Length: 380
Image (cartoon, rainbow, N blue to C red; front, side, top):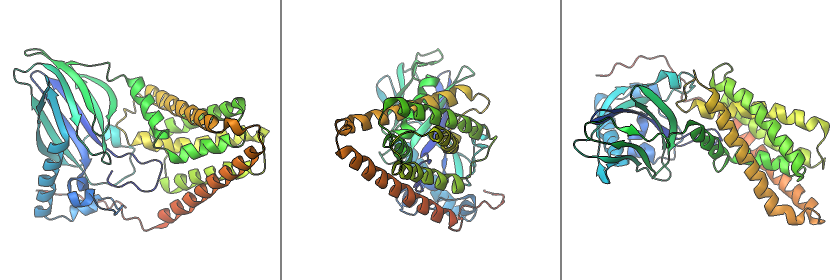
């Protein structure tokens, strides 16, 4: 969403649902209205436009949002059919959100809008591909597809990516490429990427565990306990059973990073309370992971596969972080310099954690410019 606030749990995405039909496809694309404007896309201001921001716009200003939005989407949402580039018809749909089943747990008040998308196949045949022609620093695309009345699993299309959708034959329904939309794989990748490379706070937490004891058995035990714990609160958060308050959880996550690193300065082996501590901190981190999944259009009536595979991706990423740390430091493990390395690394991790804690508390104490005011938008 526009420019992310300094947090490990922001997801920058637009949302597109495509409907594969006879002779054509249609779609509904949802995005933040403010992102239509070039001056807001390039601004350093981290304030996100809200419903109040949109309600205050004049008709002329809203017309500019529509003109700039269509120009922007026409440049980044492209298709290829049979190897030839095709530009879809894009038109304004409505102000507001289109998929409440996906967003009913969201705590934001972003000014959102929906665009209608249509592409006629004509007599063309061949592979149908979506081209997300967005800049490297721009949003990715959360993509869902409905074919023959059935929803295919959600996937993420990254910036600059070409995604195979279906095979088109004139006179027949487009056959979706189901291999591309493997639900377990999509969520596993999402979980992995949330840690590597996106989750610097989670990477530092895992490194904090590593610099207590570099032995594999206690490391994997801590990692597994952490995963079990955050699986619980992730599922409960996404299901809406427990609320997520970023102003409380985000500073506590940063503080947990500092805590495990500071503990390394006083102990050199895993104490009996360590696993219980990691479990408790895992419950906290799980709420942060849950906020990520709540940003994605996940069907909350069928959470088992997304939650389990997202967590599997997180666990694989955690093991990868431990493996890379081990490869980088194993030569020093039995040398006198290892104690110096683990102390210096722990101090640096603790300082970063404390800095993030102060920063996030300060941000939480700022006047909330995105507080929702119950105002009906009456737009002509």
